[in-house]
Image 1 (cartoon, rainbow, N blue to C red):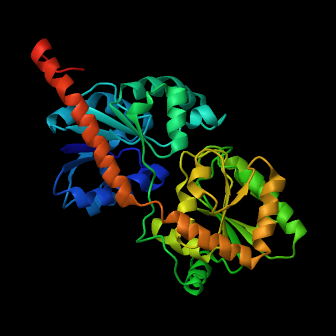
Image 2 (tube, rainbow, N blue to C red; image 1 turned 30 degrees about the vertical axis):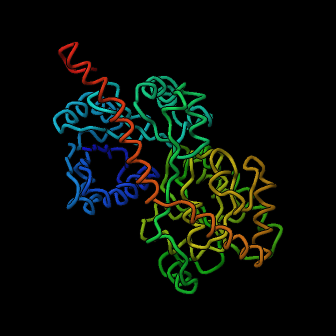
Image 3 (cartoon, one colour; image 1 turned 90 degrees about the vertical axis):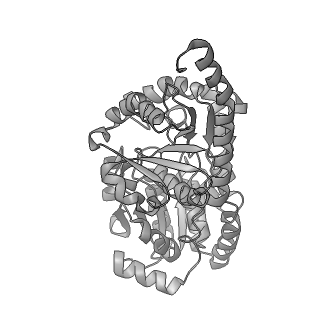
Length: 396
């Protein structure tokens, strides 16, 4: 097959979709001898895909299309033409906001979540409207849709009305080369030298987004934790500013323990494993996730995890995490206290997390994604041929 993959939604590599695309593309390299891959990459992102240059065709996309609105228009106007020119069998778009309307070839989309339906105020009204109205219509036109969790698949059926037979659940994987247990001594030294973290800390890796990522309640819970215990733990928030970040920064400033709360900003990929290994515990109180990659990464590194069970998190963390009710500050504070006060509990969570993370591999995700490509292309071929023979023109 000749397979095209759109990558313009990676936002310079600083999003979960970016990590999905990087990891999936690396795993697909093992299949590059049997299939041809064409990546459509914004000019300033080309360096991020150097690892694929020898095995895959990379087509630069002008920077003028980086703006979200222009990028959406590019997907609807320019990308279909490029797909035809490249004689693609399948076009994979890994974002519900970029799914293409016209059919230049078989279309596959990955939907990571349906947040506009599940989290009030997650985006501004324009994005919410697009997600609720336009994306629903686009989803129904795709030959196949990949859902990154069973929860997301159920949401796609419920909110988008896509028949279950056209949706395949393929869990994200964990990059074993990066995320694995390592020396705690070396990790703590790394955290001290790079970020000035000299005391035990809870780590939260998520963009500073309010209200969806639930930072404000976590900060309130940490305040309760510090009032209750003499333990000198810190709270470390790793992630770049996003919608509502000003609310989170204000909560940090108003905390009586503001000096014990560190905001690191965006953390480079190469630094994440060291932070996971250095942390005494990882906390993820998100209000909703279509999958939730950071908890699996933390588990793979042996870091005990405290997590919400909202959205797909219940199926991702399973019974390997300390579960909190994310809308209850008291619930979060209770687990902070329980984990901080019991080294044996942390060790049990660590062991369970390593086993749970082992269930998610990018090799399996890539193999199953290729199966979806084949299904999409195989189902489209007879219809496309009929359209050419009867109508005398390319189907739309």
